[in-house]
Length: 110
Length: 125
Image (cartoon, rainbow over all chains, first blue to last red; front, top):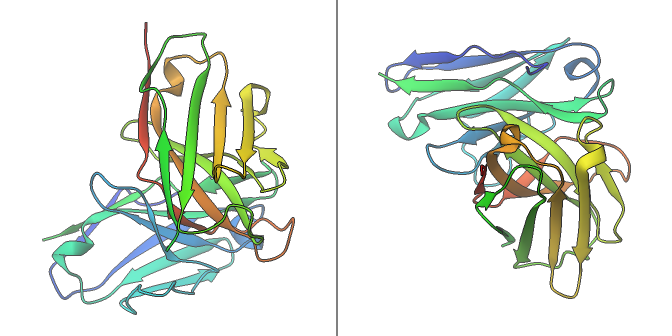
């Protein structure tokens, strides 16, 4: 049971935009930076966004992140078939004294 | 470019100890600014952080797993390892090693990059 809640799935047509929410609390998202990870089928997760809204080098600007209060959001614009993957949010939880990850959201390109 | 690779038995019997090694290439494990972490993913489920070790051997483990987890680092081989004792079927998972970026020593920031490819460990008799 994760302390970070994400919608199980989102979908959209190629070229469209999707947003994925990550809901937490003051002990995690509310007071700690949020990261997002993309896990393509059969592969390891890859860092997509860190410090709420920063992109590592090589990550296209179609991916964006934001945080407001105890929630965070990942946005993907110009959706491509290669974006079909599971997406996880992650942050530090000060009460649990552990890194925690969201429940995961599967993105489907229609 | 730093790469990580997990290795170890894919099958462990219940009550025994799971042992995995992560080999780091393309960079030195002794370079500052990083913690070296273990993360697992139960089949079809989400991600669970297990803990980390730094190059000097200082560890920090998830409290709920702490009593069963031992980590070690071998800087001469550029490797770090995980031992999880008294395993049960609930420990069946894909185990990943990952580099955790440290911005301020002691400050926990969720920033894991890169990850190893992962190794499936099944606990079964």
